[in-house]
Image (cartoon, rainbow, N blue to C red; front, side, top):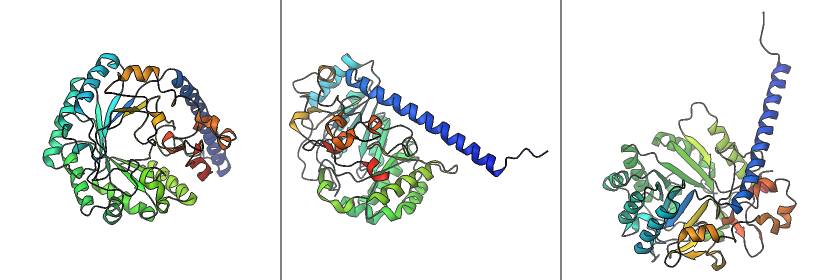
Length: 376
């Protein structure tokens, strides 16, 4: 007896599968939208960025914070150490992590002292870095300091990476840094910025990451912020954005893929691509699940957001972080989409909420970049 399905039956099964999948996705995204509104009233810190410095040994064309070798600010160690004690006392039972960033965080003269204090307070921590300063001794030190996660910037193959980073030799140093970490059993996430110059090399970059033994490859596009805001030639067009998301989705569902390939967390991607190109649905957590300490001590919503005085919530030199977190941040805890006519009329506004705060135009009250508009 033949139990195989006919072509029409197979089509019906696939249609039912897609219908159920869309129904589940719609319910999940609706629930998340309701949760976002709850966070406006009851925030829950999940990640605290500490920007150790605005100095960097590279000079990237797309840097959102416009960091470079001329950067001169290093966060003062005393206020940071005091803040960490206060965090342990006030918020020690909350499940959040600290991500140290920069500039290049390894340039801070008190890097180890600050990290040891984070460990003393029993707070998990990770780091974003260009990895050019990670030799064997530094890799051993980071393992000793109980680093939980590390994201390394590697923007394509050598020629394109060094064109974007504007420092010869930076590619080889970064790759060697990754290998030193891997040799110690440290999982490394690679973040790659895709732009006009390296877009057509996606497959080559993918094969390189595979051969490098990368387990997590995070792919993002250039956003119109910081130094990139005046470099329009880097931005992908609508067709390229769609092709990028299709590329990521195809790689994610390959059964022989040893890597977790995903899009970054930066933007709402439309109903079509949400939870397809990453393991979660979009939600901008600035000021609700995410906060930042800038290198001058200012308490902020996210280190990628345009630096504006009205968005500064306090300073760790004078304010207790927990008091600021629980009782301020009003400029972050509202639905920005209400301010934008185009957003108000958008059929997916509930899920997006005005997209990412770091690409919000505060002067015109509208998104600088809307990927939903670009991919639908």
